[in-house]
Length: 350
Image (spheres, rainbow, N blue to C red):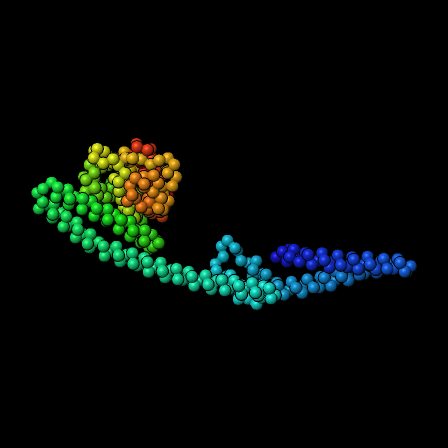
């Protein structure tokens, strides 16, 4: 603190000593020209006197600043809360320049605080609107599903059956979009809606596959669950983990080659201290240059140009939730050969 104080006043110190030396030099020249006797002790006295006044001035200045500087240097810029900085801005400033600076900081702080409050209010209103809208849409979505099922039962014509199948297919896409939107809106409150518990992976996979069985049937795809270990129970949050797995299954369905009887294989393996779930398809794959960015929000890549309904948010949601759960989510893919997503659970997660 003292070192910085003196460093800030170094130009003043240099200027005072320089002016003192100039004064002594002028005195020496004047005495020489007048033929007077030079007194070395007088020059030393002048230098000491200048130093004394300089030290006195610096001491008075330091005492004025000491209390303010002490509180300023007590603040850690990397871990300090805004409250400590606000306390500093309300202290009595030692100089008019410092007072002006603190006034500017206070004004900016008040303006920023008001903006944050407004942002939080707008965000909560938007979140409330999204939640209400999604829940309101679930009712007509369920009605459409029931009506299309009844229509299929009563329709004898294959063309009419296909028509109702298309309605159900689009309704399922609508449902997936609503679920994705709702889960994204809930991410901010993840810690409030989290419960760690043992989760049986095989059972959870069966439930997710059963929910999407119509999609498998419509696209002539076959789900397969392979257990390469007896350890199929992991520690996680069942609801959030279901969201991750469901999103990965939906992606595998959407990007598989339809109508060829291809498989989507879910394999559970034990690897040292971890259990891994591999979800593998034999679909269109992901270009190598797109792989590093597939978990970025709104990134659709080359495949997004082929499938215009892609949002680029599915894998982002899955990776974000997996990270919050303490799990690892990675992806490997080869163009036109398929994609393998790996979800890893370790004993150290959660």
